[in-house]
Length: 400
Image (cartoon, rainbow, N blue to C red; front, side, top):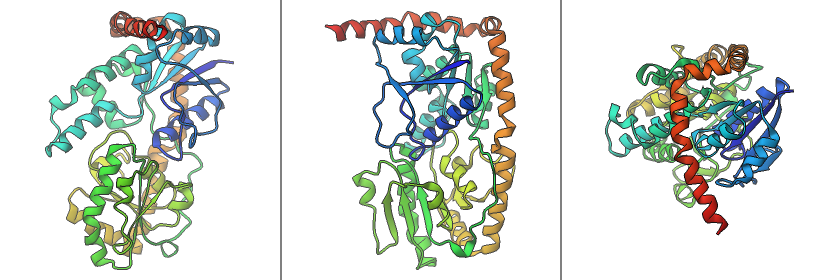
């Protein structure tokens, strides 16, 4: 039995974040292939986390070295680039033959570039991409044997714009199985909904946008309401609650499936971000058409018709939100589009066989794979002479 060690930035919270959903999908994927899985984390987010067996570790502590040697994994999966920065060099020193994989979740440097442009009220420029996060994230990708990329747009950005060798990348979006067409019809649903984890800045900005345009939707649909859900809602979020306006902040959603099957339209005017949007993927599964932006729909539907509307201007967004809410044939067509997208973009069967073939090829030719990825050796050298000794210095400081 092969042994996979996952080093988690946090304990997965699939009910709170798309990242938690993604991590649980990867855990199930390896479990189905009969891997022994050990989940290591320094995090303490227990209240809303998935009930999985975890082992605690410390950052900048030599106790990790002994633990990882005893575990002796065949593969190590890093949860985003920051865990590779913290523990990657220790894996290389203590388990040099372990295959190292990063699940990027999304490209953090891309999200940061778009955030900066959004704040400065301008379009993204090429110079925005090469920020501090870019240097760190690309270095982590190059140090590893394989990086999982959730967005086809981001895969192309890495390979075409930044010339990253596609041999060290694997495109794997959210994975959907047992795909069913929507069975909860238009007439059984009512109201608008929006959802998003409020630890994530784009979700807060999305709600602010909704607050500013909601009055224009309500003017045309005076009996409609917009219900806002999201994990880690703070006081500033609840201050937007206004029953008279039909703008209701509900807080954490306990079960997204049952929730989404109650509503008629999801609103997601996402202003910036990266990766795939979990709320939009789930809305396709649960028969909930949406209106979103080009950033929201990015890499989620190839060239297929969207399950709703994609609009970037406020006036067009409002117009299509009202239309989708009132027009039953358009709403039904949106759900038919969702079924096609799920089957042609997110069906698990499209990716799993190729993934295991990719892993097998790297494992069977690890020395050659690493030799051809010569930048890995250069960056390993520099990391082992910077990150390593900074960590060792912190260790000694903590002892004193």
